Length: 326
Ligand code: EAX
Image 1 (cartoon, rainbow, N blue to C red):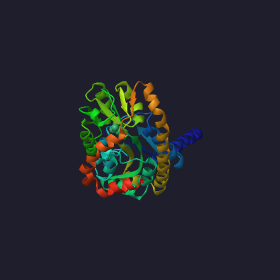
Image 2: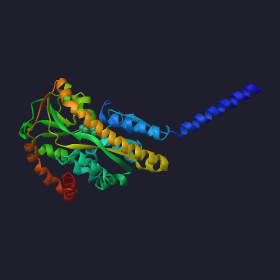
Image 3: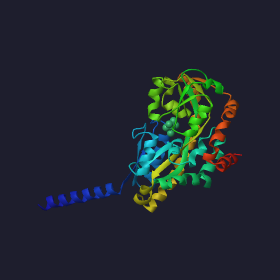
Image 4: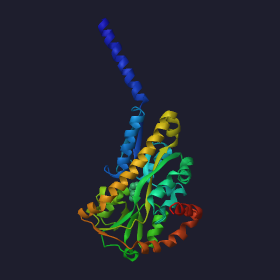
C-alpha cells in the first residue's frame, strides 16, 4: 500500500512538473508566404534556434510557410488583432496600413545595399518601424526579401517598351502598380499564394520577385524569360503583436528576443547575399533564358513615378534615403 501511494505521489509530482513546464513555455507562431527552402524560412529557423538557446527552451518559434495561414495582408491583420503572434512580410503590403514604408517602394531608390542596411537599422529606420505601434504591432527589424527581377512567359524584356501590354502580377502596393503602369504594362495586384496558378493558367504573363523566390517557388516551370531588372528593393519586416510583446513576454524574455532578432537579421541578410550569387546559373539550368536589360532606360522611364508619389511618400523622406547612400 505504501509503495502504491509513493508511486502515486511520484506520478503526481511528475505530472505537475510537466504542466508547469508546459505553462512556462511560450509558443510564437510566425507566418510567411513563401517556400520552406526560402530565405525567410532559413532566417526564421535561425531566430528560433537563437531564442531556444537564449531562453533555455522557454520560447518556441513555430513557423508556418507557404501562405498556410493566409496572405501577407491576412498575416498583418492577424498580428494587428492578436490572432497571430508574428509574421515576416515584404514591406509593400503595409501600404494598406501606413504610409511610412512607401519610401522603400520607389523604383531604384536603393542602390547601395550595405549603406541602406545601416540606414534601416538606425534612427531613420526606427521612425518607420514605429509607425505600426498604433496598429497594435511592434516592428522588430528590417530583414531582407531582395532586389526584384522580372519574369514572363512571352518574350525577353530588355527595354521598357518590351513590357507594353504584358500582364504583370504585383504586390498590393500603389507605387508598384503605378510604376508598372508608367512602364506600359498591365498591372495585376494579387496575393503571392495565388501566383503560381495564375502564371500556370496564364491569367497573367509575368511577375517580379527576388531570384531566391523565383527559384524556390519553381517559377521556371511556368516562366521562360528572366530579366535582371532589380527595379524594386523589397525589405522584409518582422512584425509581432504589441500586447503579446509587452504583456506575455517578461522583461528578460523581451531582452533575449531583441538580441536574438538582431543576430538573426544580420545572419539572414548574409544568407541572402551568399545564395544570390549562385541563383542566376541555377535558374538557367532550370531552363530560363536570362537577359540583362538596359537599366538606364528603365531608370529614366520610371522618373514620373517619383513625381506622382512625392507628396504621399514625403519629399524629405525620399531625399534622406537617397543621401544616406551617397
Ligand atoms: O514577401 O508577394 C510577394 O511577391 C513577396 O515577395 C513575397 O510574398 C514575400
